[in-house]
Amino acid sequence: MAAEPNTILIRYGELFLKGNNRYYFESLLIKNIKAALFGIRFKFVKSQSRFFVEDFDPADKNLILSRLTKVFGIHSLSPAVKIRTDLKKIGEIASMMAPEQGTFRVTVRRADKKIPKKSMEIAAEIGGDMLERVPARKVDLFRYDFELCVDIREDGWSYVFYEVIPGAQGLPSGCSGRAMLLLSGGIDSPVAAYKMGRRGVTVCCVHFHSFPYTSELALRKVVDLTEMLRPYVPFIELTVVPFTKIQYAIHEHCPQEFMITIMRRFMMRIAERLAQDKKCGALITGESLGQVASQTMESINATNSVVKMPVFRPLIGNDKEEIIEIAKKIGTFDISIRPYEDCCTVFLPKNPVIHPKLSEVERYESKLDIEALIAEAIAGAEVRSAAFPAE
Image 1 (cartoon, rainbow, N blue to C red):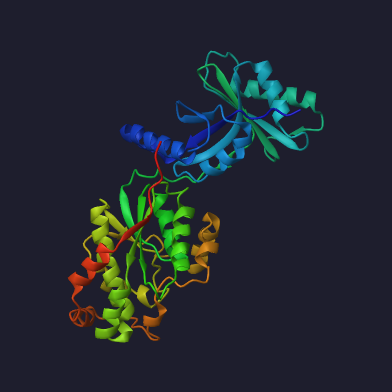
Image 2 (cartoon, rainbow, N blue to C red):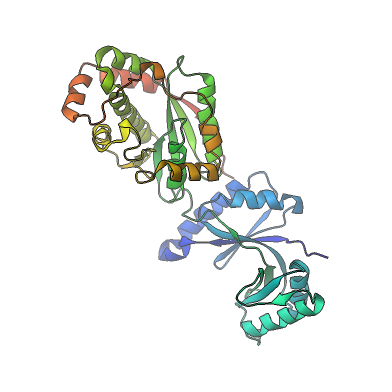
């Protein structure tokens, strides 16, 4: 007979380091937990250094765990049986919950000092009860197959569990401000969003669409990437900016080898202006140093020079395999490799300049009506994926 968990115990990570600001970080994490469980019936309980999800339909347990493992700020989760503190009853529940084969140890945390027995004495008593009920189990304090844990709280409740599921860790979404991500349909930029989200940044996205040269399926891919990121970055939104006219102008007036560099400079300018409107404090890109022509030090300097905002590049030191590994982990990889181009390839040069001189870039760019082109692109911008509704 098994004892079915009726509570999910939530432990948070870095928040305990926040001193007097801890309440602010906790309140954000609670908000994000409730947003993640939107549409599911549950009761949320806050205790000292612990959160609990209770009173849920047992059929929803795995769904709840799946959603919570994607919430930044959560260190780990444990499906637990919550019972009134009674050592005999705890021993009974512990034996029912644990596997019937293998080696084990019992670990007790006793926050309730009214209980005269020490934690190790309680653990020994529970372990003895488990052995008596199922002799096939064996105790091994160092090389164990599973660990039965008992958390005895000060409020008269105890929690019995043996599973510890890793959380997403990091900081709660929203605690580090907002930033604007230049989101392509490729592998890198969604991973950049994930990594910045893990540091508490709320991510707004801008995607540049070259209709009719890039298809509606290419745009669908970007929308799907945004939705795949939403469990990790719950208030993410996507704005799509028409970019074809800018590409025509660059193609007509500038040398082909400088096409990518000048395109990137326009993208950065537009992203910064949208970021200002949305009260973002920085831009984010998925650039990795040296990966392609537009990601050399000189190219990055050329694109950076047109904006005043900080530009975060969380992947700058990662190689492609490391980025792909994260993309697979968060579920964006299979979307990113769909065979739909996210950039107007008809305009792209065969031999782009790798080490552009800023003076040359500025000279070629001076032939364009930069402000008029930017204004028209921003006027045509459209929000395609809005923020997740908060409870």
